[in-house]
Structures are given as structure tokens and as C-alpha cells.
Image 1: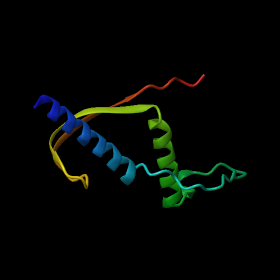
Image 2 (image 1 turned 45 degrees about the vertical axis):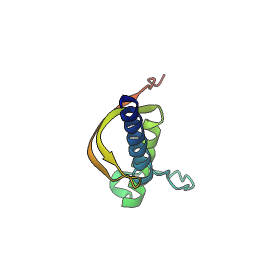
Image 3 (image 1 turned 120 degrees about the vertical axis):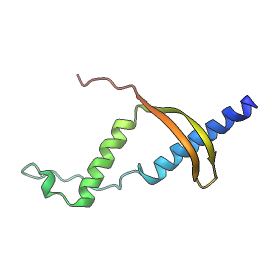
Image 4 (image 1 turned 30 degrees about the vertical axis):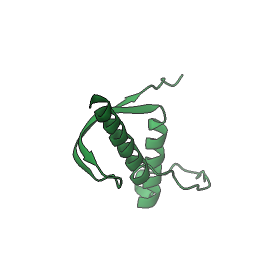
Length: 97
């Protein structure tokens, strides 16, 4: 019973991680880098451009992170979770030199 529960928890955590990746952290579209003569302000960006900046920052930040946690409840194959998921992000980053 315990082994089955641990397997279920592992499947639930994997499902949550995949859902997070597919829904929130999709890779940014490749856009050629343009360096303006004057620095841009946040107010000068379109909503789409700002979203890409935030998405790229989040992806870069989470590159050295892992997720550990527990799930209580059930998850369907379509990632519809009925229950509670508790997760902790752990990041191993080195300060810039």
C-alpha cells in the first residue's frame, strides 16, 4: 500500500510539473535581439514584449531549480487535481562574480 501511495505521489508531482511547464513556462518565441540606442523603460514595452521578458527571466531563474512536495487526493490524466498539492522550490544558484 505504501509503495502504491508513493508511486501515486510521484505521478501527481510529475503531472503538476508538466502542467506548469505546458501552461505557464512555455519556451519564449525566438525573436531577434534589437539593441536600441537608448535604454527602454518598462512603460515603453507592449504587453506581449513585457510578458516575454518576464517569461525569459522566470525560465532563466528556474533553470537551476527543482520541485519537491506531496500530494493528497487524486489526479486524472488531464491534470485535473482533486485534493491538495504542497510543493517547495529549491534553487541552487551561485552569485554573479
